[in-house]
Amino acid sequence: MDNNFAVGSALLIQIMNVVDAGGNPAQLTQPIAWSTSDSTILNLTPAADSMSAIGTAQKTGTVTVTVTANGITESTSVDVICGAPVSFQLAVSLVTPPTPAS
Image: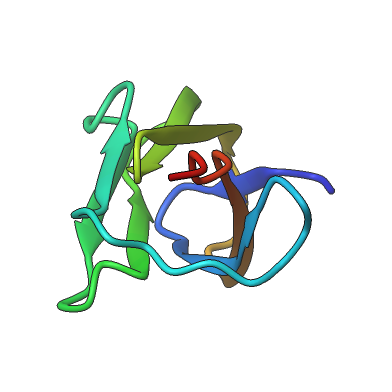
């Protein structure tokens, strides 16, 4: 996927798939944290349920968008370039660690 977005664009980033190490659906039991390596390039606003965030492209540059939940961190790189602003959607999948046997 091409992660190039124009200055002024809105980017919806969603957690679309949460599975355990075996590929089975899993629940997120800890708070979800969203971050960007440089909020002057891409500003993030998490949704109320934290399952998504809106990124607003502020100026040109490259940032890393990171989501952390259940001790798992996933990241993706986003390039903000010059061009006509548009809206995009980017999906993030999280794989939770296996549950220890009791």
